[in-house]
View 1 (cartoon, protein in one colour):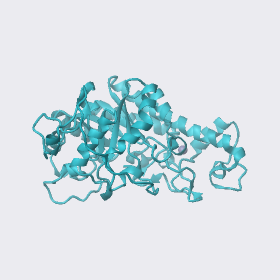
View 2 (tube, helix red, strand yellow; view 1 turned 60 degrees about the horizontal axis):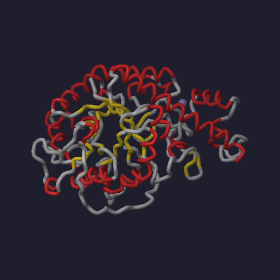
View 3 (cartoon, helix red, strand yellow; view 1 turned 90 degrees about the horizontal axis):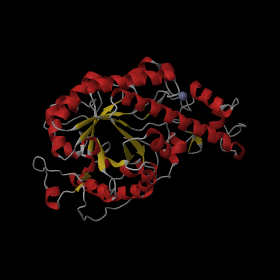
View 4 (tube, protein in one colour; view 1 turned 60 degrees about the vertical axis):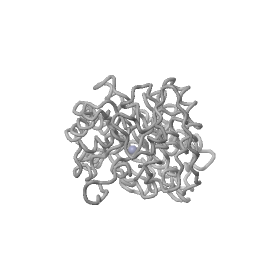
Length: 411
Ligand SMILES: [Zn+2]
């Protein structure tokens, strides 16, 4: 789902197939995995069943804003997702008309009727309606782009009015839809790489709005020219000057604190509506790019997200240098496990860890059905609990589409 314009750094090849049955794990037999559709009730995707499936099982993203979901009956979509071995759907919500509470409730009910656990999937910071209604809450980027990066629009979590309005939205979604849980996806500040891109100010770096500048001033205890710090080599505050390393560290820390506060506000809102809600947090796996680079670039501090938010599930999102590779082998998830598994389990014993694969956002990320099933197997083999995928209608699992060819656009 994320789009970051960085060069693909390396290519991995598929690892061999070899299945081993472990206690508490469901692994498809090779014969069953090869079949296009398993018999009713038979799992076709590997996962750790010890938590009972549901939100803790293979999860598929469904974005109601795509026209596909008005063309194919929801009961049919739900039946097909269930038949492929999924136990959970992540219903994507970025505040668009297609995901308003009553509409998402209709989706949630259709999936629940098929035995799937509906989870509200938020992209915090992005809310189409609030973005239109409140230009004063928009993030400000280094070169004046008005809070936009790729498909997302961004509002600033350092605006208390925005955070309150966003939490109101989450409260209404949870009360109306009766979801089993919530996933916080891509809760960060743009943009990977930081203030510089190819030696020039990164146009998608945000946020430098007055609220962010004020919070930073409070933290630094002095007046600082923030734009000069981030963009002007001749400025006395320029972040690349050795004498300003501590100052820039405070800026990075301020961004981390902002994201932590924002996530905490959302999670508290969800728990107030439904104390037993499953809290899923998705973290972009930066291990194969620059381990922990997300702290500086995105305001994402993995350790703090785990210890302070206390999620039930932590999902490692596949980073762009992986999912954009046409020849990516399903075993790449093992590197994520090596980088993070022991570390996060120490921080929060019992944490359920999930993997994530994009399976169709772009032509090069379209994966075969066999690849998808193998990814589930590799996920379990690596010691993670279950796989998650983005997104149903763009994937080969949804084919053949019973209706005429779909333009894959959001309404
Ligand atoms: Zn801001």
